[in-house]
Length: 274
Image (cartoon, rainbow, N blue to C red; front, top):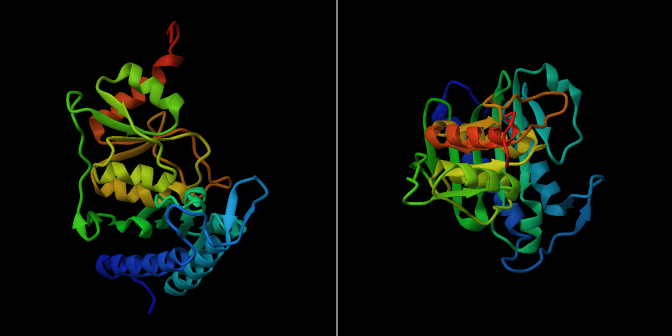
């Protein structure tokens, strides 16, 4: 039965069911602490892909396109079709975000699905089956972690603010924002950003050139959990561009988000000495 965009409960349930089914396909090839059983090869840019990525992508396209036949499609593992640029409704997916982690037996990978309307996410899910964790949101109806409401928290400087991301950006923030505690980098970008929504992290950073499929599902989860995701200049990510990539991205609760943006901008101010 086709989805209705104005019925949040069925929409949320559909996202969960679809992500869980996709997760089971991936889990069949995942071995925690061991190399995957899936056949693996390098894409043209050098990044890895496995037969599990392709199988999950195929399942997602079948399920999601059947639910909303009018929707466009953008996926890391599907050849891009410029027809999407003229479509108001879009599915944006990453079949396995964190393929390197998946292939190496690290459980920090996820199935990421976002539903976009007018180039903004209105619903999404980041499902991490090897961790037993699922994060979903529908615009105006909150964010849930394994079915329970979640809200982004911000620790004080005294408590220690947990931050994760590329080392250059973390070093800059640590110099300017008191009480930060850099954490090990989370290999799945979708999870790294979403961990801000559930309070596991206070701040998540993405280096430049992340794609729509890396961040769109996390964006709506963060927003509904009371956090903010922007580029380093404070602008919201712009989706469904001809080249669907972004600059440095910052995710945090409002106060820390503002401090992080100021810290990132500080070295570029005239006369500043790093």
